[in-house]
Length: 117
Image (cartoon, rainbow, N blue to C red):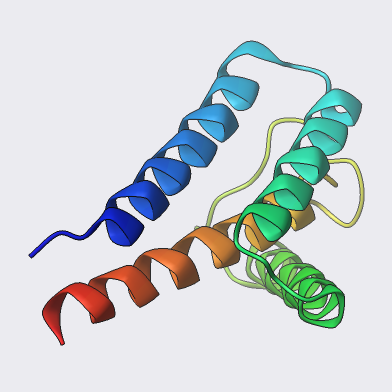
């Protein structure tokens, strides 16, 4: 049931996920979190052979997701907030974090589809 392609992709997904968790566990600076998350996003797009235009589109979706969080934080009561927001009530590292999440979830979904199709 598990072929070599799916298991190696699974290892890549888990590795990128753990790297992301490691960055946010060990790094406090918003700037360094932003830089390292952008690097992880770049690595993810290369590892999964994502075309540049699609990578840019995913980054735009990440901006949209982050702006949606801004709307929730600012205009809806009893939601969450960030301890150290940088711009419009959110940290700027949130954009590449959302973009990386989109890549990882999409790839995981594709692998599950392959396994159970």
